[in-house]
Image (spheres, rainbow, N blue to C red):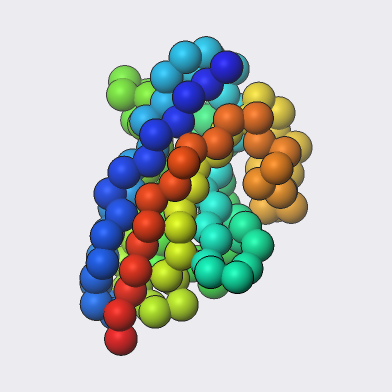
Length: 128
């Protein structure tokens, strides 16, 4: 079992930046695909992006491509989400998640529920 804890959320004005962190602990050797999801009020979970830990390949939703960047530090078992040029529509609760299987990791055809380990979330609020 892997435990995940997110941090780094906050309130920023449009155009600003934030960096979210996701610290993993437990059976981290079984992590393969790590993902960031977000959920805006009244909406379902949206996959923001993923990173395949085998070769550190990253994949992004069209809505954040060119603005968001995912990275992973093996020495700290920590995944990051660098968010630049933030927009009000980026306002949401952001969650990290991981699963041992690669399936869907490169296409973002993934559902939040299929990830065995999920964090509690960190709130991001972007004002106009």
